[in-house]
Image 1 (cartoon, rainbow, N blue to C red):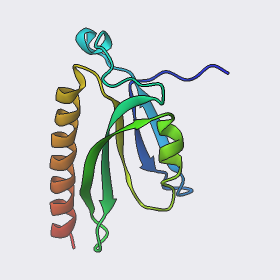
Image 2 (cartoon, rainbow, N blue to C red):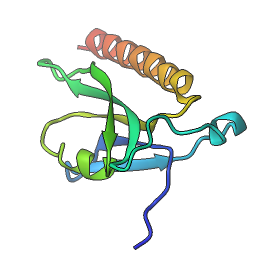
Image 3 (tube, helix red, strand yellow):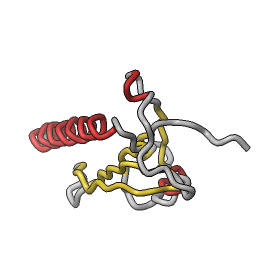
Length: 122
């Protein structure tokens, strides 16, 4: 069995069935494509992880971010079903910190703007 290759993926709840939807991606920039993996071990690669969740009022909020080594990050995310968590997992490389920090900044800004607009509409 050949393993799937990707640099990261977003995981979001599917509105129709509640299952997590996975959207895989590879880096577009050449310097990111050629970066070396950080802490590539016999157990797996190291990944950046970001979680978002709905708050008590049903609005999206940032939950947490951390790094971890996974043998299979897809299996990890599939076990999150029912937790209401969603976000992004990105393979950690010598060049990935900037990409991940930009993702977090933009995601947090979008969540804030979206929630303000929703609250104004209530």
